[in-house]
Length: 187
Image 1 (cartoon, helix red, strand yellow):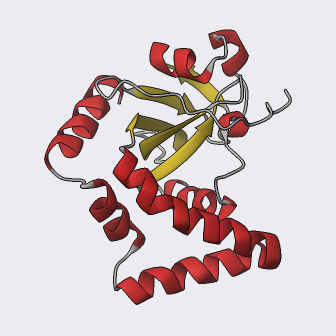
Image 2 (cartoon, helix red, strand yellow; image 1 turned 135 degrees about the vertical axis):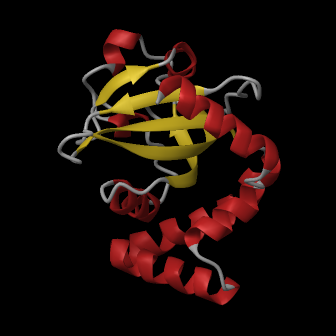
């Protein structure tokens, strides 16, 4: 499946609705809720069995996905701000909490679930300069250079990646309630 040509048109998400998708351990889509199907612009049959990165927007630094995969492959949850690409080339911003699913007997990872909610304009305005800088560094110095920059950026602020994202999205109150509810419903 080829990637659509991005266009500079944002899909405005309903802040009261959620997007949920599940993948196997390799990142191949096994499930998407109705809102995921609707927003992505793909038919459900076009999504199932495809790599989840089919909705990755080229404006997203690869290093953010490396950080995410490093964490979830170790069974640790992570939250990220992500710009996704719809089938028609439009984009949408989400705050995503990724969680690993494990077999209760073997403790092996059997898949991943992503719970998404619309990112506010305030969050987008704050994260875009960092992502632009990471993309610039990736173009010049590759993933390794971008990862070093990200580590330095966080060290300068005196925070971990999780603390930075939690502070950025205000991961308290309603967000915690939302993600907890989604995990119970789709976990």
